[in-house]
Amino acid sequence: MGQAFPVKASTPPPSSPTLLRAHLAAELAERGIRVNVLSPGPTDTAMIAGTPPEFREQIAAVIPLKRLGQPPTSPRLHCLASDDSGFVTGIDLSVDGGLAQI
Image (tube, rainbow, N blue to C red; front, top):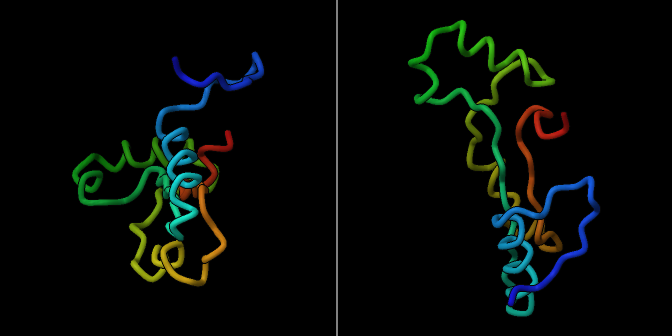
């Protein structure tokens, strides 16, 4: 039988990716392996570029920063994998213009 997690009635139970991230971070820490997650929000990529401008504007309107994200460049992402963040593990970094906060 699975492990029970105490959850307040007003909060949803942790999702599978959340549990996996937490489990892997704890399990692999003793081997010096860090586990972090990057959760992007709506991003201006080739997939969305083919949609009507009105559609992109509607998406941007619900994002607190009122714009789509830009594809990250590798130096920005590599920080989580570098020694610069050697004491960081088990995080889920939301890069979504504040969308997860509303």
